[in-house]
Length: 116
Image 1 (spheres, rainbow, N blue to C red):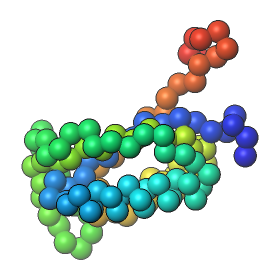
Image 2 (cartoon, rainbow, N blue to C red):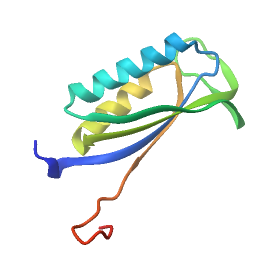
Image 3 (cartoon, rainbow, N blue to C red):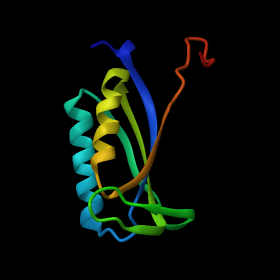
């Protein structure tokens, strides 16, 4: 896989507000493992906002349904091929600690400094 197939993404993850610091570490470790397994790279991982109020309640997925009026947001910058992005989305969908996520592909700059 060459660098031309790699895209840069920004990912915002809303996770349950009742998680412990150990849970955040587990989420980060499992996320990095999935990305690196598929020849990607996580360049930045940070807790962006803790226990922020939501505009409307979010429900967890899975057998035990829970409702949350708050969420903690994690901001991630990563590089990954477009083909492997669907596997990452699938992993996030399966994690019951993740309430919602949004992935945005960052634009590439051409040699003259303008966006393509």
